[in-house]
Length: 315
Image (cartoon, rainbow, N blue to C red; front, side, top):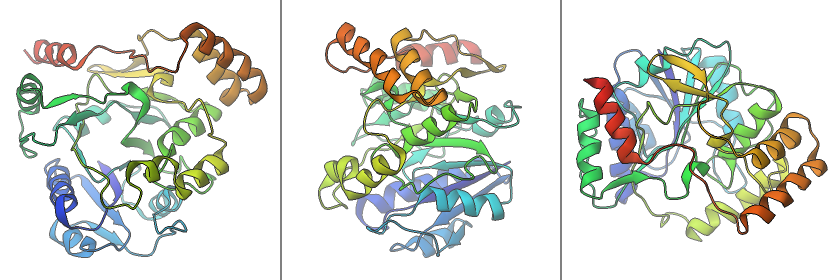
């Protein structure tokens, strides 16, 4: 049982198709799913009604009219049906094993995240398919599905229990580093972070940023992004999925078996867990000295290996 929380772009052009795909896919998860859509963009009310989703019109927005995550989380803490909740972006597709996998997490509080699989623009993907593994494998072999190019640096879904975000400051969804800020919040409070990449094959549908003046640059570095940076001191070294200390495996939750970068670990530990911001700069500098330019290091296998492992497990 889970309450799915999201907010949408206006339902027009490609965004309408992708977002309806997502709603249809979420509904395929079964009857034990509540969907709550926040905001009042074009077409949102009609599509919420069509897919039996609760529609919350009044929600706090940024100065540019974008919903705030903290406001959505606070509303859901008070009014959502289920204690287990998830915020995800409106272009994300969830695998049929999503609910059964989440039920294996027995921790009192947690944040569960994972790397997304990107579809190409011309991918033909059946969002209602129950043989999810076969469908992704087909797309991967045709060159239409791969892990996000920059590794574990972007997060598109967040699973947690009711009340996790109490006290979180203003945070604008879908703008620069809002996902990293949520991970940082959990690091600061020693909340277990679980990496579900190897179990949950979560899909990100291709889209551009034509709906927004300034495009991708405005998303990453526009006024709303700068507000996120300022309110949460996230100007550099954003934490990401690599910081997860736990992994979701088919048998449940275990301590992470993935190799960690010692210098990065020390920087994150000092900066977020012990609030030693300036001391953490020492390890940031050492990391830059060792690695040269900033790079994203994968700490889990490539997609074809993960798919192969899942096929072996399923048989």
